[in-house]
Image (cartoon, rainbow, N blue to C red; front, side, top):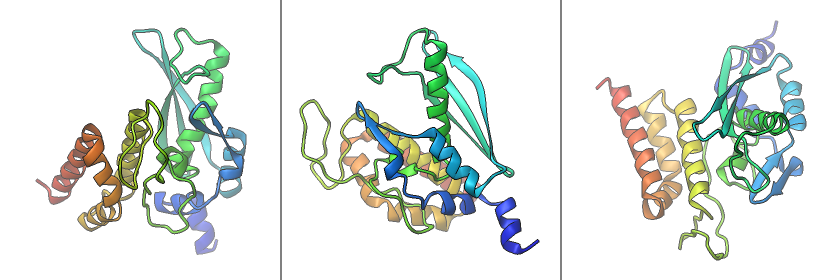
Length: 228
């Protein structure tokens, strides 16, 4: 067995991210009611082309007190596993009370594509980017400036999030990405903060709650790495 073959059969998170994160998903993404959807069939097919031994599992649903439902999915590639959640929503992107089996099934497949993004495939869709990164360094680029719209939250600089929900999603994705890819050394942690300073400044200036989450995460990770 060659070294490259062995690496493909037992990849690291960085290996998988470099492979799947560089794939342009633009032709297979569709915008509906303000959200971008990636074809689950295509996403899984691409994953199979690179990692035919990959597996996914639908975890038990989470039923909330208001009778809305969150579905969960787990994807495993070699010895690597990630889990992701997604609320069952209607065509207006609102949580559904007592969803039907069809709504749950559809949400599960959307959750699968979201879980694959945690390995790199189409990750920029959830971060608000327009094009995938072509290098192996994880850098969450801020969205491009857009013209202000009514009833939208827009920054006055080069960074912009159209809604507080978009800012929250971007902050969550940023934290999870750094946690999985850059939380193993102080140097890596400092480097990713520097590379994403423009994005972090946007949170600081316009979304203080999200900025507080990000800062607390970096501080806690730094202390952990120092053994404090």
